Amino acid sequence: MKQNMDLADITDDILLLTNQQGKIIRGNKAAENLYGKDINNIEVFDIFEDSQSNLLQHFLQQALQTKSEQNFSLRHAHEYYEVKLVPCEENIAISLRNIAENIKLRQTLTEMMEKLSFASKIAKIGYWELDLVAKKISWSSEMFHIFGIKNPNISVKKNIIREQMHKEDLPRYKDKLRKILKTGQAEEGIVRILRPDNQMIYCRYMADYVNYDKYNRKIVGTFQDLTEFIEIQHELESAKEKAEKLNREKSYFLAQASHDLQQPISAMGLFIDNLLNANLNGKQQILVGKIHDSAQSLHNLLNNLLDISNLEAGGTKISISKFYLIDIINNILKDYTSILKDKKITIKITNCNHLIESDAFLFERILRNYIDNAVKYTKNKIIIGCLQYTDSLKIMVLDNGIGISTQEKKHIFSPYYQSQNSLDNRQKGVGLGLAIVQKTADLLNIKVGVKSKKNKGSNFYIIVKY
Image (cartoon, rainbow, N blue to C red):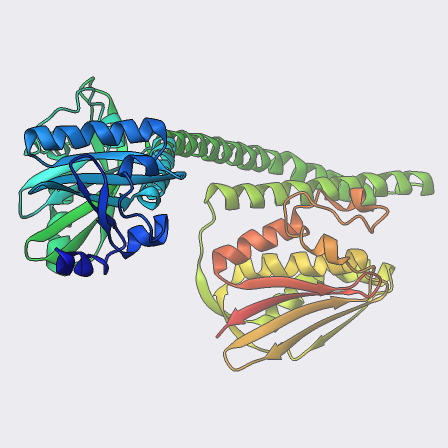
């Protein structure tokens, strides 16, 4: 017996040997460290509090009467012990294992599981695993909730995922599982699940392969109910389609209306030109001149509206050809001869004799808008020039006008935006020119932009790839 007790000193458990009356005959090192070396010949019941002592005495009597092992737990000195009583000839062997740490771990684990369950419920995520060896499937409680199953007492052999998944999605889901087994890589996707109440829901699944050993192989995964998000996404897509349809209809209407107004406005322009050539006195000439300017502004506005509407409605066709840049520039400047003379603006053209491959009409539209802006805002000088790079050509229209602030540069290519720097910008259009430039450039797959500082002039550019 002494040899056995000496061997017992290597454990942290408290081991005691008592007689049938509960008097301690011997204790191991762990018992002596806790209760002192003078524990021999004292009754084991005196070590514990009254309630716990009575409990120990009860089970000791049970062990003696039944000649069988007794297991229970008790509390001592703010600690919890797992107690084992074993009848041993005329004595009783008692083992006390401190389980306080285990209880704390269990409590912590329980709290973590409760938090995880709460998070899973909020996020609508359920966990499942398929034991490939035992051929059984197990689910978390949230899986039952997601699949609309009120009775969780179902057979572990019953594959409800397969039974409730939409028939069109099931083959793809099975292929994913086979792929997981083949590659060992995780897979994911979105499937439809039909609940017992015939409600269709959308779930995002994730699955992976776990291979502990040949006896413990599993496919584990999650299902997350995304029905609310999918429905919101469908509603947003539907609203987007309706908005795009309305926008196309609006653009088509503007295009048609602008086109229909072109003819009477052109006729009005001819009548005004005839009046200008008539024998009018000074006051009449001034009045007709103002009418001419207003009619020209209206004509330009309609042209811009027609251009932007066609671009938005997708009605602009591209015809690629090769042309010389200088020819486009000269063609534009013909229309500005008189206004350049009246405003005493000088124009310098440098290094612009390049061959370009693009849509000549649309390219001219971009350059015309740049030059028109430069004429409006410059003080007295405009430069049209090019810089040649290895794989591109940069075409620039520079002026020495009022310039553009850093904040405004972010918006000037947006429809209907006008610079706040100009005092008479309301007389110079409705802010469609540069929006047309941007949309046309997108159509031609070329880059446009501006470099400018307030009161330092502007440099509007086009970059064409060779």
